[in-house]
Length: 134
Ligand SMILES: NC(=O)c1ccc[n+]([C@@H]2O[C@H](COP(=O)([O-])OP(=O)(O)OC[C@H]3O[C@@H](n4cnc5c(N)ncnc54)[C@H](O)[C@@H]3O)[C@@H](O)[C@H]2O)c1
Image 1: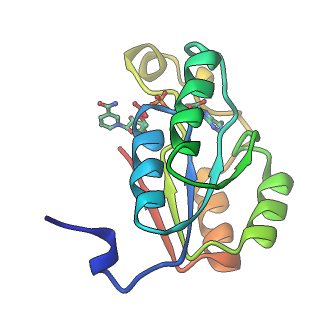
Image 2: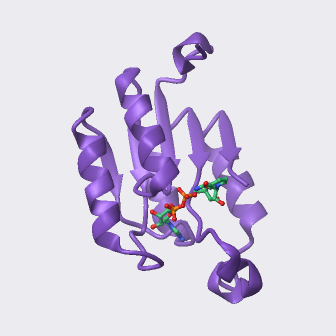
């Protein structure tokens, strides 16, 4: 079985969207493998925030982690979080996934956010690796 521990091991991982379906399961797996974990999630109301809080409780049962309720489009907050947590790897799962959003891009992105710039600046600043989901 593939284990993250088999890789040249990042000690500190940030998961954006870590309160969501995939992110929270990933977060549980990372904690079980002894990773120092930071989660950034806005707990948006695209679907029930209480479901996301319950996901976070399940993550907490696996171990301690740092949680920041922030919108990843808040560039200055993200800079501060990167500076404070210094992740080796970022796994970027924050999204409003689904067909509805795909049809209306105004729901997904603020007009003045340049995703590529955010990713490349944060990568340069603090992180050795940056993984995107589809
Ligand atoms: N669920 C699947 O079957 C599936 C399959 C393939 C790919 N994916 C991709 O994986 C990613 C995560 O999917 P999921 O099913 O876990 O979705 P999800 O909606 O359960 O989780 C996404 C999380 O991102 C957070 N979020 C949204 N916008 C944010 C923002 N601006 N700042 C901070 N947090 C924000 C939400 O609060 C939520 O907790 C998406 O990119 C999705 O397209 C999902």
